[in-house]
Image (cartoon, rainbow over all chains, first blue to last red; front, side):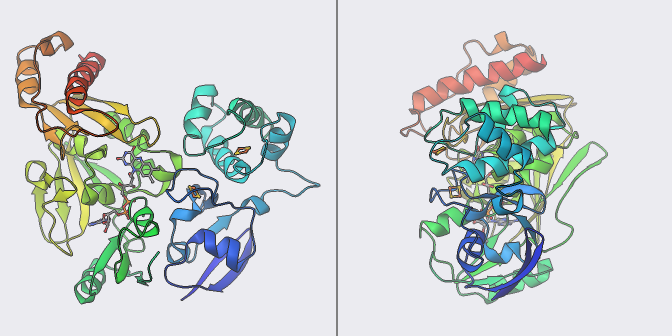
Length: 153
Length: 260
Ligand SMILES: Cc1cc2nc3c(=O)[nH]c(=O)nc-3n(C[C@H](O)[C@H](O)[C@H](O)COP(=O)(O)OP(=O)(O)OC[C@H]3O[C@@H](n4cnc5c(N)ncnc54)[C@H](O)[C@@H]3O)c2cc1C
Ligand code: FES
Ligand code: FES
């Protein structure tokens, strides 16, 4: 089937099998491999992107459900010369080690801060990142980075 | 995932028609339960019929003491609504933010996972499940483990709740998934006091003995010595039946303490 969607501001049309996932569209059809797949159970959040303004697990959205949607991936928020404030905060606070969870963490954190109205405290950040697992950092510096980005975003 | 045909109807009639014409069809709403099941090859439907493009099935509306939630309303939207604070609180503690941004009340109730949160509210707030063909009272809706009164092809279109004077939900979440090991909603309404329990048994139920004790004295202490029969409760790696029975008492008291 053919679906059309907007990805990082550009209109895209892709031909995919009926059982394709949004993450397959992004990684396989469009070559946007910044979005990761870390689990098979919808629990790790490595695959989080924004769809119509909400953070979603792209491994648990069928391509058909994303037909007509506006999607933003980690590639769409900044670049090495002009990092998004959340990316900058992750770098400044040493909020990543292997980096596997980082794209999903950053996309979740941006949604969290945008909807948090500047009022997030540590507990709210930890609760908001419940659906993102990190095997390396122990979360401490991730939480610090998100709180720092809340002031800079 | 096995192969299937994906459909995206734009009306309920079209969806029901696609289902009756499919060899082995399944509806899809938020996909937060169905898609993981498909990915693990635990189901192999011939057709997946997505309800996501059908208008008019979302939102929370208040009318004459009844709160109506559209079947396709996402957990995040219920969490953000101020109609029944205890219901919003319950929804805000389902899974994680991403699950709440996709998962729907209709999908949760159709699935009837014994550890799902919403069923506690449906039984405690005298809910009515409306479908494409009829209205089903909460007391008739949950029939067993992952079993409901829904017939093949029937779609949950909305759920009505009574507006309580006060209500509170307490759960003991599984630390990994956030599903309820046990969850208890206590509601005091104009004509009744209801205690809805999820997570403990095969499906959600009301704890009659607790309701009687609270009707006489609406305080946490009134539940001292009131036990629930745990002989038929779930027992798994997360908790024994006996521990679940204990949790029902503890959580009910905590809920009462918040609103007494
Ligand atoms: C990581 C994770 C954590 C979770 N934690 C919790 C939790 O803490 N508490 C909790 O309660 N739930 C939890 N869930 C489940 C979540 O709430 C699901 O969203 C919900 O159970 C199913 O809703 P859905 O809209 O995603 O349904 P889907 O997955 O789309 O569908 C589920 C089933 O219902 C059927 N169906 C869907 N919509 C309808 C309808 N309108 N009418 C008739 N049949 C329908 C489908 O055919 C399917 O069989 C979690 C899920 C995940 C992935
Ligand atoms: S890959 Fe783990 S939640 Fe999507
Ligand atoms: S930095 Fe390695 S998984 Fe998070």
